[in-house]
Amino acid sequence: MRGESLVADVGASYTRVALTAGSALKPGSVQRFENAAFAGLLPILAAYLAEHGTHPRAICAGVAGPVRAGTAQLTNLDWFIDGAEMAHATGATEVHLINDLQAQGYALDDLDPAWIMPVFAGHPDPNGPRMVLGLGTGSNIAVVHRVGADLLVPPAEAGHSGLPHLGDAANAVIAALGAEVAHKPYEALLSGSGLVRLHRLRSGVTLTAPDILTGASQGQGACAETLALFLEILGAVMGNLALTHMATGGVFLIGGLARAMAPLLNRPEFRQVFVAKGPYRPIMEAMPIHLISEDTAALIGCARYLRQRLK
Image (cartoon, rainbow, N blue to C red; front, side, top):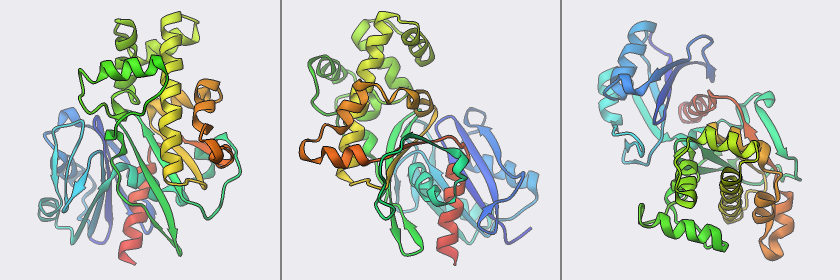
């Protein structure tokens, strides 16, 4: 069938693909693929299109890596994606590659309210910028601006910006991190693998992220200390980014680790550091924080992106 558009959310571990029906996802079309079973994105798309018997007129893919000149290199997976090659292979007349956090940002106005859980209600500015922060295999942000009836979400790669100067315990871990990752990026500690690394650097013990969270909930000292340190670093980084972009419309968390951390953000290790911005503290205290629970949000954002481009 010609005339449908295809959207894809390409992560480090899984790729989700769907068709659009008008400006929404076509019911029953969402399918998830395990990346380890494929050599790249094109074989996934070929399998999906063959199964659904369709030839898309346009494609938008949100990819977990930087996009430049119509191509993308995934950060945590050895896949290179070329938009022109994708157009040739699928017959699509338009192919758009955007960062996966951009895709999440483009989804904000089209999400079911039931998929958005308030963490701090705050006092949002309805016309203010919003920021999406992803915590999962990696870490990144996207900032969402309103331009008339449309959304504008510039690309960002904040996850590879350097960690800030903090208290003695955090600074000791960040210094130790430099021996492993010289530029000491946010996502080296603020991600699923980052939580594992943080615990190892400060305790010398390697545990999985779920084991660390379980141990902390059971009062195990080393795990509890790691979690407290993680929340301190997260509060500092989130606060810096939210203030940099004046995200007075709210901060939206996405990703598996974000879902695990959201219930803990009322703890002082996070909250006090997040709002500690001197004369700007009232602005930070008014910023809402939300959790997005829906796994198809990036696909919905890609559909929104195509709707704006094709109208």
